[in-house]
Length: 103
Image (cartoon, rainbow, N blue to C red; front, side, top):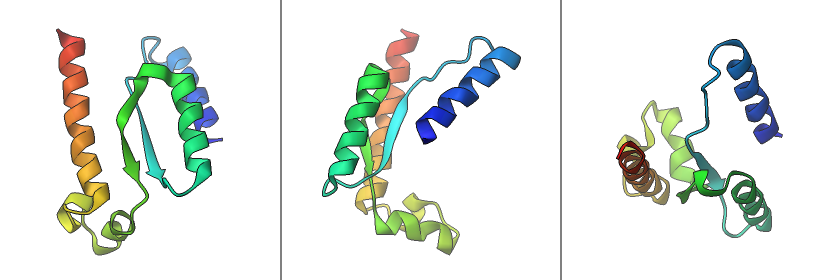
């Protein structure tokens, strides 16, 4: 459902504002390895978007969801929790991909 809405929004923006708009990358978030549905969704997203899907997956994590209640970004709230560590890995992956794209 969310993916369909995103693709419709991208098409609307392409038609009305920016015909060159493209999705640079896709991040899998709220992933729970104990849940088969997470694996199914991840497989479908990877099949559809291919290489645009980042290797780093952001896990479902209580500390990540607590951070906004304390008015802090996740990295400031608990930089050692699995979710924060995943976001740090994602940032590195994004930078590497952008450097490769610019070269």
